[in-house]
Length: 204
Image 1 (cartoon, rainbow, N blue to C red):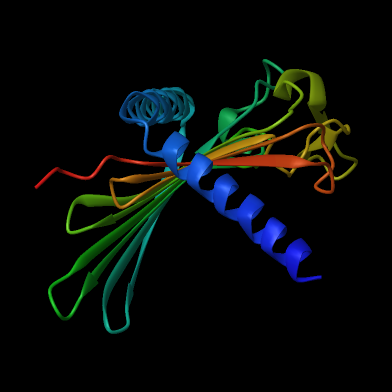
Image 2: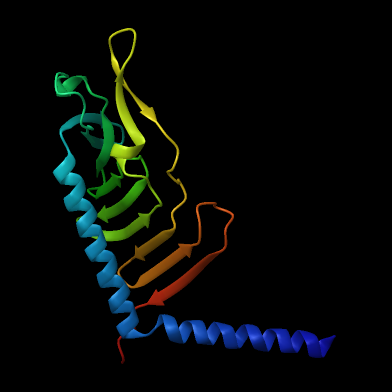
């Protein structure tokens, strides 16, 4: 029994050391970080280019909170006014001005299907956390159609084909840590693989 436990502990130690060596590879960390930042920039650019409406609200509790929600629309019949088409939340930007002087920002970007594609967290202008997620989604034009109801209003008919579970998700934390999770298939119960990458520490 003791020999079995010792063997298991040895395997766990070897696995941990191997994972640490892989995660601390400077070239691999830089590659994964640059890929994430490029993907995030593409999400921002694409989403901002599709925004048609926005609204801002304020709340004063233990400081000031400003929330701006931005929306896009789908193409509808040519004789329908754009402001009558359904709106889809694509971006939410929350800024909190705390009484202690700290400014906290949270920015969320959504796909046309409503999935959270990118989330950002800033403190006093410095990026603290960044998460990008990819999904298996059907193109909005194929999945959603604008129809007119008996009441004379316009709504959408939605078909299936969109997953709420990311097939890939990458997290960037505190400037020196990356977590990358990939999953096969749509189901959340499907096997997933998670890799960790840590920026190399400065040598003394």
